[in-house]
Amino acid sequence: MIKTDILIIGAGPTGLFTVFEAGLLKLKCHLIDALPQPGGQLAELYPKKPIYDIPGFPEVLAGDLVANLLEQGKQFEPGFTLGERAETLEKLDDGTFIVTTNKGTQHHAPVVAIAGGLGSFEPRKPILDNLAQYEENGVSYFVKNPEQYRDKKVVIAGGGDSALDWSIFLSDVASEVTLIHRRNEFRGALDSVEKVQELKHLGKINLITPAEVTGLRGTNALEALVINKEGEEFLLETDHFIPLFGLSPKLGPIGDWGLEIEKNAIKVDNTLDYQTNIPGVFAIGDVNTYANKLKLILCGFHEATLMCQTAYQIINPGKKYMLKYTTVSGVDGFDGTKKQAPKPVVQAIV
Image (cartoon, rainbow, N blue to C red):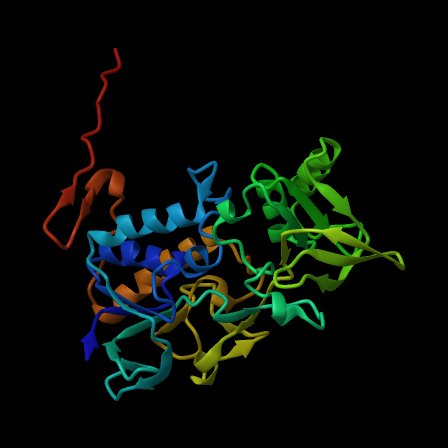
């Protein structure tokens, strides 16, 4: 039986940042994740993808952000159960919880924080007769290592942020990048759309709209795509086809825990602390939903911070906690180390 103060289900960026915020309150954390390594989607799907909306980082690679979060929380000695899926939740008579994984590992904690991101997920695949024949042999649904496409011909299909972002990024890696979308309009960020149009004019991206991929060709590996543009079909030679149509999220076993679910997400009270309908169980990050919810990493960080304040009260009933800014108090690690904030410089006014 693994015992901890806060049991975090999901070791993505929100779960990892929870370790730090809980550590400031002297609370121990243990994380469960079905993936074999921490980092969630950032580590599993696009570790080399740049992220632009993390405060203080004009640009940071997803994998580097994960590494930084792990380093930030390391001083608070979190535990990990990796490669196992949280299967069941049992509430005991004393109000604490036991969470058991699909491999039988039991975890006991007074507070459970579900930070499972999109949950278990599958890529939305195009409907093509011979798609499976070329999967991992020219067809991929994620970009894990951009160097795989160095000096290759790449075709990306999709109209959202991922399709736009990877088209822009790979324009400096691949010998040829083609972006195909079934509409002339894109759903992604306006600045990304403008950047794609700029790269098109510079000859660095081939843009084919409105159009769809209707067939795949190749003897052993992918060699060409059949493109339908406004009723006319033609062949387009390529080495790689990356359809980026988003993910189909599934809560998995968590959906059977008696939590209030809305549109495949967990409803929480965002007026206070992101607690679910089960007292002591919280949901933070992309896995939750509430009015005006935004699925952004920085929002998950905010939710984790407020959640930890209530978790402290649950674990230490009646005990008051005085908020101290790390710029003043520094950070005390569980290993006895201390990062002391510098003394303020007092300047006399004459």
